[in-house]
Image 1 (cartoon, rainbow, N blue to C red):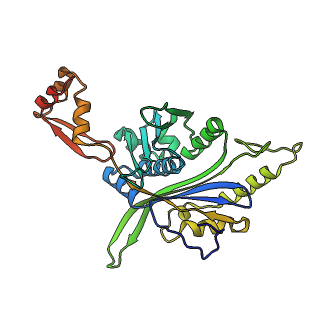
Image 2 (cartoon, helix red, strand yellow):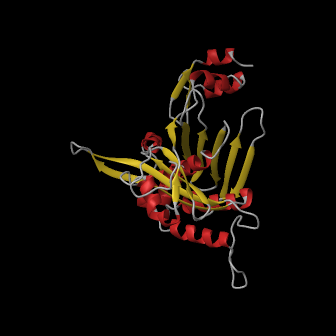
Image 3 (cartoon, rainbow, N blue to C red):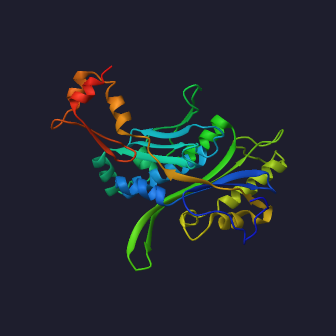
Length: 331
């Protein structure tokens, strides 16, 4: 879209996409993520308790939003590791390539089922309750010939968005505001059949500093005269904070309509979206190769009922191998 949008602007929209935008009058850029069938597939195939699904849904939206900014072929991985009932959240995004024109997204959670159930029954189901103390690691992998970059921040009890704010402030020193949401949506089809499907969404704005301008978090005080950059940033942040969760999840509310509501007075421009797809890189060949890196004694310990069974955490695909074929591949 090459012109500032109006309320009637049309752009290729829908679900499972990242839509970049720019607030022209304020010098601020941003992205909206809208996840529908993709996040529903990930969460329903694992059948996590609802609070865990919400967390992973937000993690997937955050991963897509950050990963979509990569300007090279590579992978972005988000990993939240904790001492709480949910020990691990993992989501990763792989950039489009010649064989797959969409960005590829996947994720999973590891948890102690009993501790999660006990925590939820006690009314302790927030991100802070279920994750507890730990860290959020954000990793950019540019391929085998390039050095990986990783930023690590402490998990914030207030949620993943607050941890992400700290990452951008400390690691990238870019003023950033993020709002995320995930939840089940109850719908009826044309024949009246009801089903619940999962949705997730996120919106982010960032201010790229001009000379002497705004970087990271900046608090003004009475002795400081706000610069134009700071005033613009404060205005954009106030507007973004009016976003409600249902606006990020509602399939009937196009992302451009939400942008128009928020920023039309300042001139907002939407750019072509990046479409997303669920994709898992697991395969029988790759799994066999990994198992072949173990010793024969370790393979024997994996055998149950005469076979070695491996389940992919991301897509739940199950692979079976005879111990003999794995030992033949032992290096």
